[in-house]
Length: 327
Image (cartoon, rainbow, N blue to C red; front, side, top):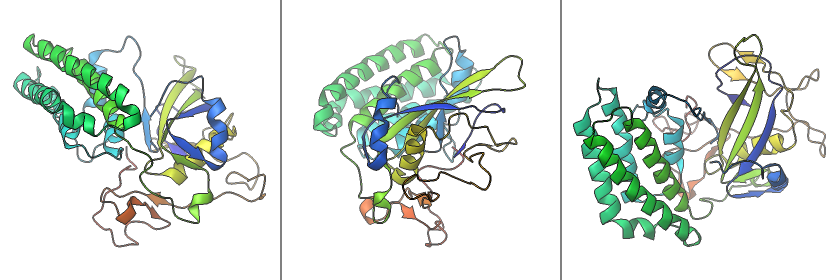
């Protein structure tokens, strides 16, 4: 398992997980381990929640890459990776995310913020019916509530802009984007594709899950433990995500040291047993392997990821992955 983290040190790691959709195979067993955690939403993205006393500048830093190319902000990637295609809510998302460009201007470019907020509010109020039409029937009640809250949050955002409160702008932006993401999640209708054989017999994550990982930190006088929230996106990597969640549920990573921390990547996942590189399946008594699994932005017929091969191998030289490695 390869994940980015902020500090180095051994990781007697204690991990637990919760998913937001169906799981199949051995992964179904891990639900009991998840009940004491909050609802989560991606393979490759770590979302670090700011502390209660976090300064607005930290929020600005967290959002600053929203409009970058490629997108590197974890929350933006989570929204973009959802299998939904509602033009209205996506345009609201685009307008509010674009505010990050205005935040880079010294003193904040309020004309840009105002135009984005007003434009988003116009869509939410004028195209409410079109937005709700895209919500899954079983999630309609939550969708209506989220849309109502979004409309109100945008009105509050207008007040912030009128007062030119540059400290409050990024906070209002994130509150609006949280509601946009909630609405987009409500639009997901089932799992978007059939996992092909022979990969369909592996533990699968058909949806999203959040893993909370507690990491003990060495050689730091100020911090001795950290908590990482890792969002696993089974919508785009069901085999990869299912394998990771299954191993979390089995306690495979518990107590495991961080094995690499060199400024480029923080990595763990190799057992301490001599000659063992991965998880030994207790049934087959063989090391479990999974295929390379990459979902392109421009999806193939059926929406199935590319398995076993790189994009270059199959001629997708200009394609971009939904879940970039550098997220």
